[in-house]
Length: 181
Image (cartoon, rainbow, N blue to C red):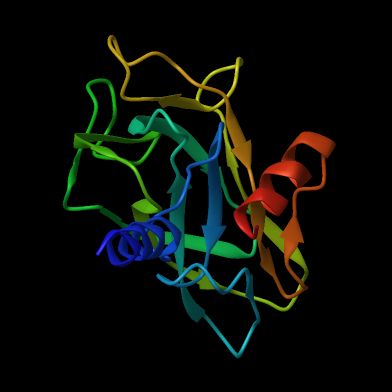
């Protein structure tokens, strides 16, 4: 009987649902809700696509975010949708500039804050980048008492008419490798 209980405990601990969160918050831009597409290609006049802003919380969780998206001249940005589980922060203009989200519940797994419909107008290579609303960096707050600000690792840029643009700074590359271990 003890062996059966030990085996059950081992299976629960090693199942795909049980995973450790990274020590740093991460954010990435994707062209789909499954976080698998990081490039968009021109398919004719006004090629429609979606931007999804996905966050991977740290071991301290994710409470809120504030950031800008920087669009190249060949992208026309349209409607933004906020995750229904989130609310706008004070000081944000309906989620546009800057884009903001506050979650009622602490987020402990991949979560999207915004997705936006856009149009690609030509075949020139370019990127959409996530950036800070203020000089000192992206703002993200964890779920610890007082919701302290936490550093953010940018995983990628959303590429237009070219292969994926993955961040390659040493600390960022470590964060990316940790996601696939």
